Structures are given as structure tokens and as C-alpha cells.
Amino acid sequence: MVEKEHIIIESGDAVQPFAYSVGMHGSRFFAEIRDNKRFLGVKCPRCGKVYIPPRGVCGDCFVEMKEWVEVGPKGVIGTFTILRYAFIDPETGAQKPVPYGYGFIRFDGADTLFQHYINIEDETKIRVGARVEPVFARERKGSIRDIEYFKVID
Amino acid sequence: MDRAAIIGVGMTKIEKRKISQTFADMAWEAVNKALTDAGMTIDDIDNVVTTSSDFWDGRTISCMAVGDASGAAHKNISCVEGDGAYGAFYGMMRVLSGSYKTTLVTGHTKGSESVSSLITNAAFDPIYERSLGMDMITACAMQARSYMHRTKTTAQQMALVSVKNHGNAFKNPLSQLPLKIAVQDVLQSEMIADPLHKLDCSPVSDGCAAVIIAHESVAEKFKQQPVWIKGVSFCADSFFFGDRDLSHARSLAEAAKKAYAMAGIRDPKKEIDVAELYDAFTYQELLWLEEMGLADDATAGKLLEKGEFNIDGRLPVNASGGLLSGHPVIAAGLYSMGAVVRQIRGDAGGFQVKKAKTGLVHGVNGLGGQSHCVFILDKDK
Image 1 (tube, chains in turn orange, blue):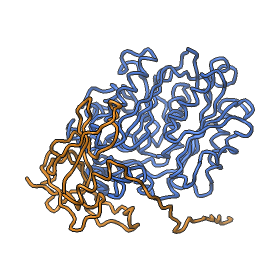
Image 2: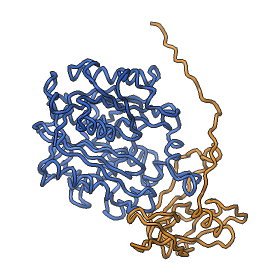
Image 3: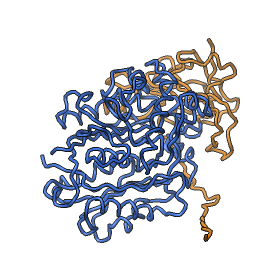
Image 4: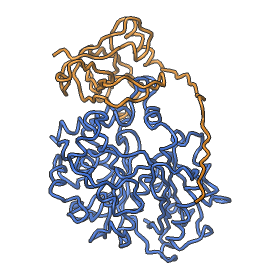
């Protein structure tokens, strides 16, 4: 039998760098976390829903949102998962250490959920509805990583 | 309103790694199978819609790279970025527009050539979400948790979806992963992201599917029995996961309602004979069944245990083996459509169900079911 040979072309280490504008809402949101450890959402003038992260338009109402509302910093776990399989970190390309917690947080005063890491030192405390608070990075640069994780305070 | 029918389907075998085929090679195979199935030649096709994703393909304007192998030369070709069900929707709109009579719709994916978690991670918002490493499995694990929390659906019930669909796959030669497994095997498989075990998740797959959609004026001109599109709708929800009630899928409930109304279906539980729906993860089959009104709220797990969704049950769901047994991401909706078309024609082979006059096809686009597309197909015009 003739052995088949499969030739593969690899893309190598080529990267496609982007520079994303975070916009007016993102700028204020990240600056408040960095400078004051505060979370700002925006409120829809029509339905009253408070959105976090903040953005310009309420999708349900199709109206512009301009009213800033402080939310949190405490909240509850809306839903969560514990990652046990080593995924690749998109920032570094390295495998992430597992396990780690990941969840959606409902800040006090917000109507949408905000995603971030959850500290899972004590897995028995991780449940839907558990109260949490953020732990901030010591050196904050104006990005989502200025929050290290949320921890259960029940 | 004018009517449209599906008059030919063709699918490659779904495989873990189609190392001997390029994207165009897969398209060539699926397109020719569809033409043969319809009894047509490429000259009978007057326009083409290809469906693909640039990120999965690792190239810009990926849809245009398969045009030659899809017989699009000198014809109008257009593209859809998303699930194949949306390509079919667009293809149908084209024949209903009056400008075309026969649309060839293709969808292709090779999950094997890239790192799936990085591809799905790139679909998340680059400002707020992506750098935290969220990917499709992570997001769906949280959706699963949310659904289980609200409905009290158990891990065992979810596992049973995997047992059923992997078992069905033995009857479908196109399927990638037939498995003879028990609930315990699913629960003991590696925990990927709580509450999803490895066997709660669909595999990485390669494949291409093609369907031919014809205007009613030509639908009966070729040798194949037409399967009529009686109802169709798609609806979208908010982009951010955190904006949605993850334990529900309101856009699916809305899409199903509109598709039923268009098809004149009053009681979907009684009138739908067979369904192929998007089971990328076990819990999704149960959640989607409830949102589409094919099971009462929070009961799908219990009905599954009673065998209602088995091949010989009240409503056979994913008799083909579903996506859990092979998941070529973009082509998925067209594989589901191909399976239901064959059921209605009575030529589904080993996975043929007893009664298949009216069938439902469900496709998903966007993370965790941001948008849903529902087709109602029927033997009768």
C-alpha cells in the first residue's frame, strides 16, 4: 500500500494587532475604576434599565443613554463556572493555571450582569446568589484587569 | 405569498480532521452531492450563497474562496457570515424576490485547523470581555448553570441527551462520533467547565453541507421530491451575555412563535413530527425545546427520561446524532436541514423516523444562542 503524505502549511507566529477605541463610555468607566475604585453604569431614560458595562444605546428601546449611575461595588453571583480544563490565555498565549472561577456579577443597583473572575479558594461558598465584592489590582492601568477578581463575602 | 422548497441536499461526512481536503475540496464534494440528489447540473443553478466565518477559516472574505468549487463562476454569488440556517434563509429570500429561481446554499467549517477556544474568545467584546479569556465553553457553562438553577434540571438529565444523541449517531453514516455510552460515562468524563463534562460538549469537527432552494415555479421540474418551506423566522437578543436572562432564550421563543404562525401550526407539540436542533451542549437541547414550546417549561429533562425524544418517541429530536456527534460550526444548520429534509422524503436511512410529515430545523448564530433561526418544513405544499 502506498503511504499517504499530508503536507501542512502553518501560519507561524503571525499576529494581527489591533488598537480598539474604548469610546466615551469605556474611557469614563475605566478611569473611575483606576482612580476611584468606583463602578459606573448608564441608565436608559425610557425603560430605566441600568446597564453595566456602560454603552451608548439601550438595545431594547433604541434610545441614547446619557445618565451615569454608580453601581456596586458589592453585588451577587448571577451565574458562574469553575474552569478545570487548561485554556490558552488570549493575552499571553500560555495555558492558564486551573482551576479558576468565572462568573457574572449583578452589582447592587444594576440590571445587567458583569463578567469577571471569582476567587474559588473555598468552592463550597460559590453559588448563585452569593454576595461578592471586588478585589482591585494594586497598580491600575485603566483596563478590565484593574479588578483582580471578586470574592465571596457571605 | 410565493412559496419555496428544498429540492436537493448534500453533505460530506463529518470528521475530526479532513486533512486531505481544502475548504474548496469539501465544497466541491457537498455541492456535487446536492446536485446529484436534486437531479440537476450546475447550469440549473442561477445563484449561489456561501456561508463561512473568516476567523474559523483564518482568512479575510473566506466565503469568496469557495466560489469556484461551488459553481459560482459567471453567476451572482453572495455570502452569509454565521450559521448555515441563515444562509438558507437568505437563499430562500433570493428565490422569493423574483430575481432568481434556484439558489445553491453552502456552509463550511474546519474546526481542526485552529484553536477553537481562541476563535470563540475572539467573538467576545475586546474592551470588556476578551482579555478575561471567556470562550464558548466558559460562556455556555454559565448558561447551563443558570438554566439548571432555574429549572432544577439535573446533570443526569443533561447527560442523557449525550447518551441519546451519540447513540443515534450509529444510524447516521455521516456522523463523526457514534458512542455507546451510559449516563455514568458522561458524568465521569473530564470536567471541562462546571457543570459541563467533556461528553456534555460537542466535538471539534470539519465538514461542508449544501442545499438547493427553488421557487415554486420550478420546484417540481427536477427529479427530486420537493420539501416545502412552510414557516421561517429568526430573531436576535442582546449581544452582551450579561444583558440576557441566560436561563431563557426569548429570541428563540419569538422566532418559533412567528415560524409556527406562518406555517399555520397551532399546537407544535402535536403537529411537529421530527426536529433537528442546535445541541452544541447537552443542556441546550432541553432549553431550546422548552423555549420553542415543544416541551413545557422546566419539563424537557423529565420528558427525555420518559423517552419522548428518542427516535421512536413522541417527538424524535436529533435522530441524526445531532451536533454532539459532530459539529462543523458554520455548516451545522445546513446539516440539520439536510437531516430533516431526508426524514420528510422518507430517505433518512437508519435514522428514519416513523412519521415525518412536518419537521423543524433550528440554527443558532452568536454566542450562547444570541440569535435563533427556525424553519418549519413540510411534505405538502
